Image (cartoon, rainbow, N blue to C red; front, top):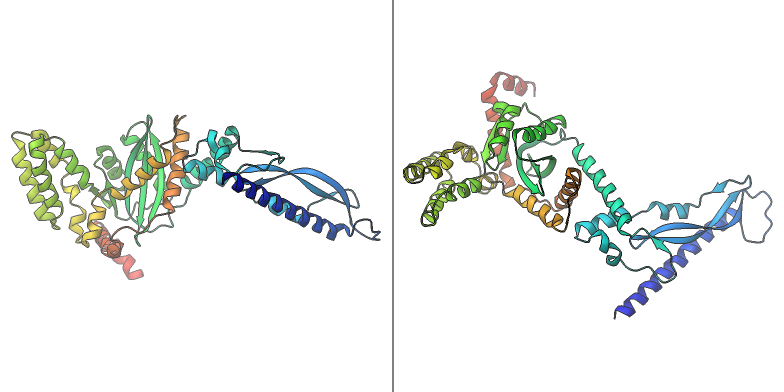
Amino acid sequence: MLDARATLHDAIVSAGMRVLGAMLEEERAKLCGPRYTHQPGRCATRSGHTDGELALGGRRVSVRRPRVRSVDGQEVTLETWERFAEADPLTPRAVEQMILGVSTRKYDRSIEPAPPGLKSRGASKSAVSRRFVGATREQLGAMMSCDLGRLALCAIMIDGIHVAEHLVLVALGIDERGDKHVLGLYEGATENTVACAGLLSDLEARGVRTDRTMLFVIDGSKALAKAIRAKFGSRALLQRCQVHKKRNVVDHLPEDLKRNAGRTLSAAYQSGNATRAKRMLEGLARQLERKHPSAAASLREGLDETLTVMRFDLPENLARTLSTTNPIEFLNGRIRKTTHNVARWEGGEMVLRWLAVSLIEASKSFRKLRGYAGMPKLIAALRAHDAKLNPVVVDVKEKAA
């Protein structure tokens, strides 16, 4: 079966090469006229053949192409050859193979073999690596220079992902229609205030507005919360991930108390009422305080910020979505899946290139945010907060509109 398939592949490639040769000769005949025929006033002549290269099946193959010269000796370009030569699928093919987990060493084996007698190149480990590095560097540059001012963002989720000794902060934006957008990356050694501030400064420089209230959903990092407040001030509404909060509290408890505490936390966050939830959580903290003060302190730390979205009176499915970092955690899971075959990381630039191409690939399958139909209520809550902060300016803008 494999031999028959290889034979069929060789026959198809050979037929394609013959068709290409016929097309080139036909174009040359139009320029130079029929062979062995005297043509007064013609402007081009045949000039034999020369070796050229075209992309075929994930590699470059040698092709003998006809040449044409003008009557004054200048090379005349054949449009047919130019069209085939400009269509270079090698770089996208190499990037796709790397994303699918094919190593540079195995790239040659992952593509169809060249027919016998057809010279080829461009499938070696070094050639594929050069194409992949160049393409991912270009994609990283495009991502990090993209204008964000065109996006009507109302929420930003930020989370960190560890790659070797590097920690990369990833920002995911959600616009007013519920569409998701990868906003940017920032590499650092730890999730400290400097790295967080660097990410936010980059987002601001590329157009993210700091003069309108924005919802930030984070995992509970104190450094990240501090950096957000420093950049956005009172325009930042922080929502700490309820899943992370629950996990952090339960991890401080012995096994016999974890289940009951977890149930209380879940019941509070699912109650749909911020006042009731806060009362339940404070009651739990009082119960834990004497025997498990660390768990009580963990619960009280940033407690109000785990209830931010609950105060917006949003539809249940949207409120649950925005109360956790699950959307960006899912995105980080896609990154890990794409990069799990990388055996050796050679610096932060390589890490950023791989993460950029992973995020671009993941964004191709983005769906709207779960519960996106309730986005108008979120927008109304954010604008109401703006009105509280600066009612005069808001009133003037509304009258002008």
